[in-house]
Length: 210
Image 1 (cartoon, rainbow, N blue to C red):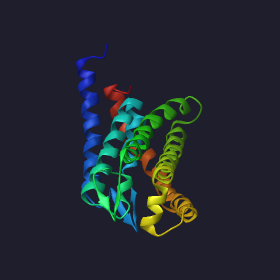
Image 2 (cartoon, one colour):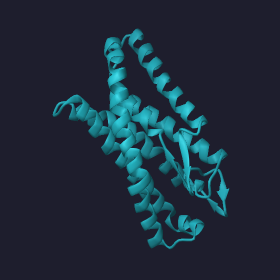
Image 3 (cartoon, rainbow, N blue to C red):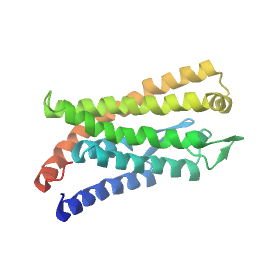
Image 4 (cartoon, one colour):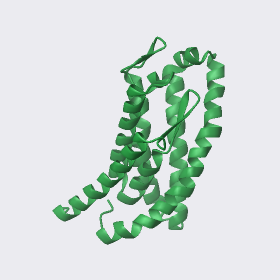
């Protein structure tokens, strides 16, 4: 069984990452408006937590990421915020249950898969390469799941708000992947290995990975 001391250490580090998520949400650094959408840096702490603390804590921080997105889109909405929250109506368009699927599921999977993938990759390659590969792949998976969910569940409504056909919406989504998505991937590839390298000795001294 896990000792109380180890549990406390895990919770302290988890709280540290949650605090980072909250700071990012409350400053312009977390969600960066670009036209009708927001680019984000919120995925960085989720990836780092998943890699350092394991898939369970990664998934938990992913839930926090999703919650911050829900709150951000509910209280400071953009024209397309209805795809991330069922609690508002924007331009006659209202979110629903699938808004919650989009806002939570990809973010929870981001942290869970970051921990799982890193655990597998570190047995096959250099540790830094494993961290970078997990960060890159999971950032891409997250972006594709979010945009895919928007297209599948809200494609027509999304197009109506942006005055675009379904084909134009598809092209718009691909454009986001090749611009904002790539920017988020590059950020993850650079920042996550640096943060993991800096924090890993502390985690190992505390012996709390799991």
